[in-house]
Length: 280
Length: 280
Ligand SMILES: NC(=O)c1ccc[n+]([C@@H]2O[C@H](COP(=O)([O-])OP(=O)(O)OC[C@H]3O[C@@H](n4cnc5c(N)ncnc54)[C@H](OP(=O)(O)O)[C@@H]3O)[C@@H](O)[C@H]2O)c1
Ligand SMILES: NC(=O)c1ccc[n+]([C@@H]2O[C@H](COP(=O)([O-])OP(=O)(O)OC[C@H]3O[C@@H](n4cnc5c(N)ncnc54)[C@H](OP(=O)(O)O)[C@@H]3O)[C@@H](O)[C@H]2O)c1
Image (cartoon, rainbow over all chains, first blue to last red):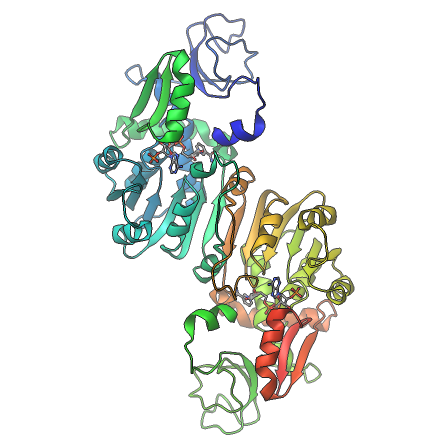
């Protein structure tokens, strides 16, 4: 959400953000009192809506599954992972995939779906604890990008043959290093570039055109909203993987509405493992 | 050929280059004396070959068409233009296409094929004479990137609605400006990056990830050799367009084998309009 808050908001606006909310009063039979909805009405404790901006939580959401997952692995971030892999990368069994910010909401699902698809998965993250978490999730290789002496070397060591696919969450110099390790005809799904979001002056790096030509790389930026029509079906698949134990979900929960700004800034700093959630 | 000469050659190697050559002695019935072949045997007046590196000039090459076109519009550069447009961009009728180094061997064919396909075409080149040439070829808009006060403005003025497709020959800061003018879901075929080929230290520019994500852009590097199996069929189509007057071919001819280095350096400086040819 950082790119949106940076470019589309002005001072005084309600801060954007998604929530699972409970309907406590209703004149709309589509949203009965007591039901739950996913909505992007921002950082507010209570909201009034005409229903247009509300999505009912997936039908038959199992009672034993926390509703907060509708904001994470079985919600927008999970869908982002799924579409990046299936619609953008077209990841195939036996291929090697690289993902950065791998212990995050999107990245942790990316790696697990790639394992479900029979791929080798390499992930990078910003702490030893996150690296251990990635190993638990079944990643084949994982490293701490903050402590390796050379990114190039770490990437080469993790997959000496290079990478077929790269799920890009971070941007900047990580990407430059990763491009150099792509195989011929490699595909890159550009999902995020979190290392650039807080730039005051834009960061620069070497142009990658020659690498793109000589290796015939394909690179595509995407927003999960492109496939909104597939959401209901996709959420069912994510839920099924979760129930089968193939998709583990971890959340980083901050308690209290008043701690929202700190939680958001903490996420941008990398405090979170899995989806960053605020419980109100 | 500059990326290849830069990275794959060492001092003392024969300089790489393609030529149309006449067979003057032969022990191979596939290449009878007097026939013509296209070959990449480098900057040599005479070569000996076992035939493996030779391609016969297209069957039924019309007598009234200069054989040198087999090095230009009805040869590798023409094929590059065609594949970039059809295989990489998937250019569709009614779309707007941008091409840079537009007066060159590849660029001039790109623009003309895009016109054949019913598109609006914008081209940039490095002199007033080249701009006039582009207008002659039927480009809808053309500008001299060396004299405009702002690239961004020139691109916006040439197509206020932006660009569906961008055929990239130049790279560097032209690309940064062009990316900003792409429409949502724009496609970029990365064919060349001539502004970077002679870098001693790599040029840098602002990372474009956020633009790629927010506009959901697709970008693909390619080499024409990927579609070698389609060459015979494709050359026939290029020749047909030429005979129908839909594809004009201009050449920049330098005379004399000894002037080859000067011609090559001149091409990198932008001396050429159309394909740079050396007649020996
Ligand atoms: N295209 C879409 O439709 C779409 C949808 C959702 C999200 N996204 C994007 O996907 C990416 C991941 O989102 P998420 O929700 O899953 O967030 P997240 O990964 O849960 O949290 C962000 C993580 O990014 C890493 N990070 C923060 N600053 C960094 C920096 N300067 N350099 C490198 N890493 C940094 C931190 O992990 P480390 O400790 O590992 O550094 C942090 O934990 C973001 O770029 C987001 O904008 C895109
Ligand atoms: N991918 C492939 O398979 C493939 C195949 C063939 C060619 N290519 C590439 O396609 C591009 C065009 O090749 P071509 O054979 O058609 O060459 P060309 O356009 O006939 O000649 C090169 C032209 O590039 C322009 N140029 C030179 N230096 C420049 C700079 N620093 N900044 C901007 N423009 C510059 C000049 O025109 P201006 O006066 O307009 O600046 C020059 O006339 C090249 O990048 C080449 O490497 C790729």
